[in-house]
Length: 273
Image 1 (spheres, helix red, strand yellow):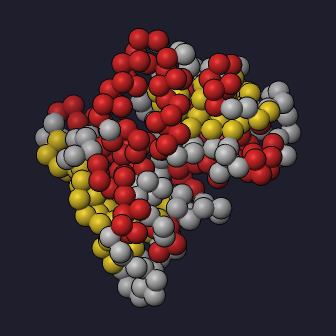
Image 2 (tube, rainbow, N blue to C red):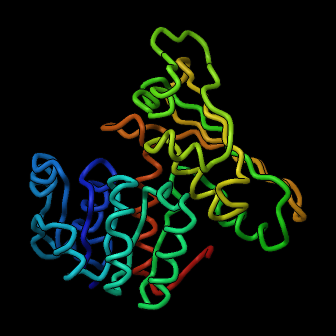
Image 3 (cartoon, rainbow, N blue to C red):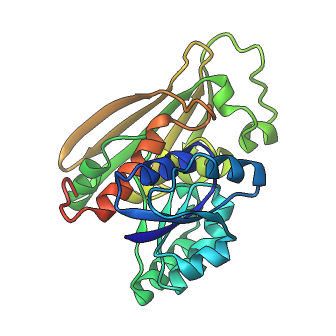
């Protein structure tokens, strides 16, 4: 069984730990880390210890001892630990995909992983259609756009809103709060639009992927609309995600996607790659 270290004990990290501890995935949670000891301790109490007994470790300690590090904390965590993991030949699963909007950082991680033989896994997250988008990109793409519509609570505190003095309190109807390149969106809304980063990596890149973000007080779900044009034809899909019970900024599907990716990594039969 592969030994896993989990960085981040929020909703996604918790779901990953529970899925592994259930015995459904042939793996072992070796250790967990969160800047909040309270969150880490809460997750440890949930384990039935079916596959070993996990402990709290620093990310550096887990990189030295694990086969796979799963990041579900923040873009800052990716920037700090992705290269050390790759240098150590440790596989990495990244949930805060927006960190890869920096082309130099992305290149360094890619080259380092290639040199060490490690793999970097990026789950599809809260969006569907990444398999079709990657296939379509082989023939050539004309345009890729993502429209994200979220309840006000899901966008509250985003750096872009604060820096631009956009007040959503008392909002009664849908409001377009951002339109531009994915490169800017993932910086301005680091907790909200990881789907845009994933779509960018599958298609035209961060600078050529258009993003619209709408604050909508009339909805309770996170809605993502993907539209793609290219030599293959036209693709359009809408995903309506229930937010996680613990964090309105995170879609429940994002956690399920991470668990699904982990199952795929450990399964000898690969479907839909």
